[in-house]
Amino acid sequence: MKLVFSKMLVMFLAFGLFGIVQIYAQASDLNGTWVANIGDYTQLGNRMEMIFNNGNFESTLDGNYISRGIYTASNGRYTTQTTHIFGDNFYEIGLESRWYSQEQIRDILVPIYRMVFTLEDANALVDYMFILETGTYSVSGNILTMKKDDEVESFSFTRK
Image (cartoon, rainbow, N blue to C red; front, side):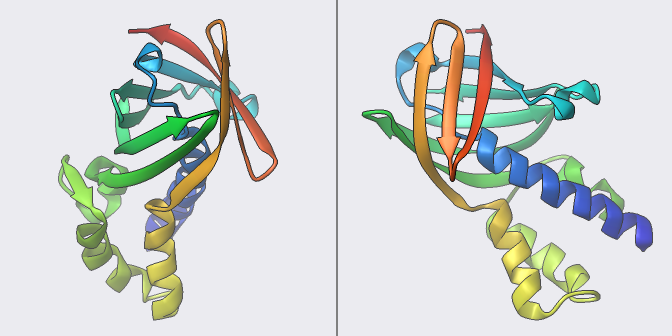
């Protein structure tokens, strides 16, 4: 059980990071794959990618799906909404390799989280994985720069 909760803590941290990373414009010239320039995180050997296609996104870590959702952007402002989480991220509890909606994740994870957290906190942890994000963005050459809550992240364009 300790291994499961420690892995889940890592997932919460990763989803927090992906919440920051999942911030892209809907402009067609941004369609393609962008790699996060995240210093210590990528120095650990992890390659985080965001794949954008006309208002939809998918995020991967070392080639494995993490999340997918929708995004909109205009006038240098963006909004993203994660709609699904990939089951492999919770292999410790036996989720299948497929996409899960927020309600499906809630039905599976809240009973497990309740072993450690209050019902309110357990639901909040699930909600955090699907949080609506807003912020600002700009593109200069092949670099996408995004700002949310005074945190600035950059991404390099890799391919269409």
